[in-house]
Length: 310
Image (cartoon, rainbow, N blue to C red; front, side, top):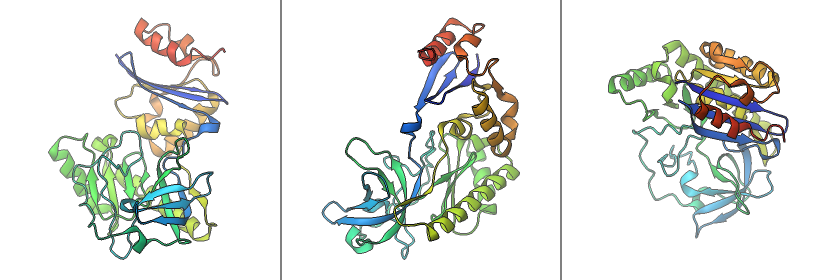
């Protein structure tokens, strides 16, 4: 049995399914009007500090102000960050590869009213979408993911995905990152990097360092309460986060989405290009192209694309 990623792309909606051995294990939908904001970075402005709640409201240019807890504030002079625990994960990618050797939790002496003031500008990242009348949950703990690594630009720490269980491999990966990372920078090695070469890790690291420098430069000149960096859409995240060596095929039924993925994969994951395919008739439901698969697989396809002709 195979592991496939199925991508159904239309102007009004993009649907993605991860099918493992005929069983639908993940399903994601993204509409242009509902594009997720998790991972986006903003230059915000503190509009209200709440000592009683140890939190602050931050104007980031959206309809509702974002909410920033004291544990999510970076204290520059102390060089400390919040504890990236499982309850408040620092990494917003789909597999949330928490390192099991995380930095120690910060000291409780930091109080929101002592480190933030109304009118202050601050660089923040969304780590939880706005829900109902609640604004986005924000953090100053910036994370930038690539295929093999997640960059923590303001944290001096190296972590390894918990899903990599072999201790020898973990030690080898840690040694590789320690040898090539800039002093004072932080990285989490993702699950997909278990078999990555040093060249692949260096390429990801160079890309992320350049991306962070670009973010910093934009933040210096951008107006307050504005978007600085926007995370990838669902089409490209399917390559970055889901298209691992365990996946046999990524099947796309849109020529436009296929070309977009090819261009991205050539830079991000060229070894996966051979696993990428365009359905025989772009724009037609993938369900019609899978007649050779078993009934359970076809049912997954049917459930995924049953609205295609509506």
